[in-house]
Length: 468
Image (cartoon, rainbow, N blue to C red; front, top):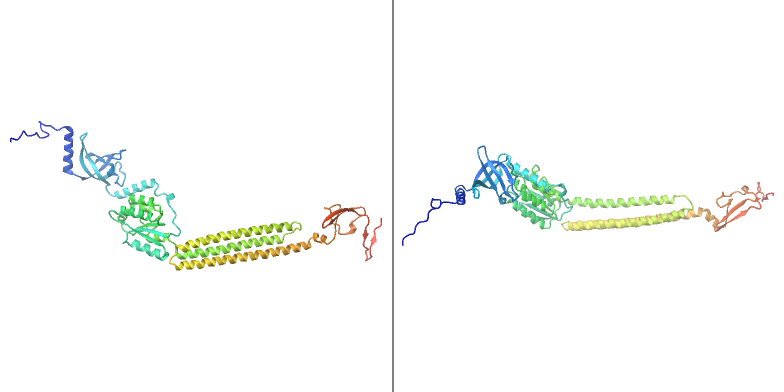
């Protein structure tokens, strides 16, 4: 069978290319011929479009080329491009088909020259600080006595051994959850982020993010934006101890507390057991001092009441003193019960947290001693108050015996001149016939007029009547 006429090739006079076909063909040729190449140049006319794409010009002293970097790729750039910045780009030459314009499509970008890494890090630090990730107001206090401590670090590193050694020495009974993570090299940021999230979900009271010392490049994972944001997002307080004392990473700035070394981080989160023992002893001493102070105060008040003068006000003062004493006693007992209950609760919490079990027995004996001291203090307090009441009763009895009212109760009469407020007549020579006087008995009073005076003789006479 004879072959039909051959079809003309595209781009000939018989079958010419359209403009769009020409541009597409040129784009394919460029892509196939070059692929992705590294290009160095200076950024100018940089534009971050609202779509998320970047458009700019790469130039040197002799030429320039338009460049575009799409949103999916520029999200991986760790610094902020700007005009005049020297960069190194991995780019594909291409033709923008609708306009036939030659350009490059940038796949990755990094600063070029000395200090490029420092520039990217400083720009990231400024951006995260502007978001408030390093603010002091975000920092949370560490728990006083954590029961469960999470440690995010390499399982094979010296940092983990240092942390475990410090925790065993300071508080052997604490529970430690080790969450292994890759802390160096490719994939380290993702590994640290996952480990932090796992420790946060595990119900730990505090998390230690630690790594031993090394070159500054070895700590790059802790400057990664993903790690910093994971630290800031944790609900559990985080103590970072990365590298040496002179090394400060962005993760250190986002953590609640920064420690100089992994060992220092472990020392920050747990107290020594002896510190707790000393605290209990100090509370016992403070309780005894408070009781002595209260007793001294009330003893002084009772002494003041016992030495007060004034016959008519003595019963009222005694009654008020009794009321005040009773109220003070109730307050002291209530304060004592509250204090003892608080101490008991704190001791019980501490005893539940202390391990090994031998410490539970020791704390139980301390608790019993505190209870015994409290009982003895209450008994001594009540005994002293009872003795003070007895002294008050005796003083009241003595004052009553000396009172003129007691004398009147035996049948005597109190005579005053002129009226009940007049001066007391203790000598009949001060009276005159016809003078009005006031007579007061224990249960009544009367007014009288002097009719006659019977004055005693000067030299032992039986008496004489005054002449009219």
